[in-house]
Image 1 (tube, rainbow, N blue to C red):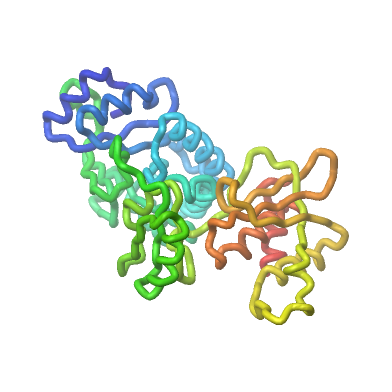
Image 2 (image 1 turned 90 degrees about the vertical axis):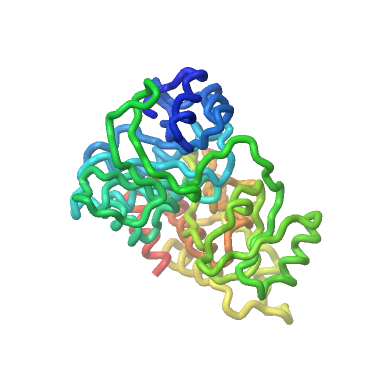
Length: 366
């Protein structure tokens, strides 16, 4: 549905056999809290779409992805959309092979904001679906349109097969929708805390974590390593075991960026006095590389539990030592890259995610 619909009219699509509707976030005709309630009261499921003006290839880049994701995040949270719902971002043009790198970067920017909050969905042609499935930071869900696709179909969760039609007096596009498309299902019981086991071999460790969290629910990943829906929707999800996150972890870009610092606790840094040591800890190598590349720069690092996203850098206006926060909720395997990302902001505080920042990131990382 493209426009707002009066609450009483949502029963029309339901009686016509419709199971779910997609609605846009923001704008003059964006989804409202009242409409969300009307959709769910009519027994319909809902999926969310963000489309500002992605109708030409020049629209897409990393920073645009960050900006669009921040806008979508604010809209979704204002509507009360629960964690784990998918927001679909559109590529509403006939993207050519030479455009795909910029589009992939756009979705990388989206992931930096939404990972851990909402699923990232992509709308586009057959070619866009294939390009994003091969990206370093692929979307979580796929919404393919028949347009610009030449009759070809890629794996998808939603498939649009007709545009510019009407149903029960409402202007609509028609889509096939799978149950695992990241739909907003209305009032459901959401777990406060859940423990997700990488394999059944992690059962005893997971049981211990569950007991410490009030005997909360335990989930085991299936063979495809996907996250069970009830686990994904939990307010707090604790992952036990495994080597890598199933969804690529990215640092949380913050619009307000004004600080950084490296906090060295005695228990970590006085290693020679310890009898129990981590012999392959990559974090000191990251810090050593930073100090060799940028001697004299200071920063304090701390592991934090109260930040959104994977990491955040603060550079104080009074020119005191910057502070880097790394989330304790990300997998250990993701921490080195997140730390490199944030230290690049310490070195280049005025470049955000520009070319100088990117060059600095790769210098430290490599």
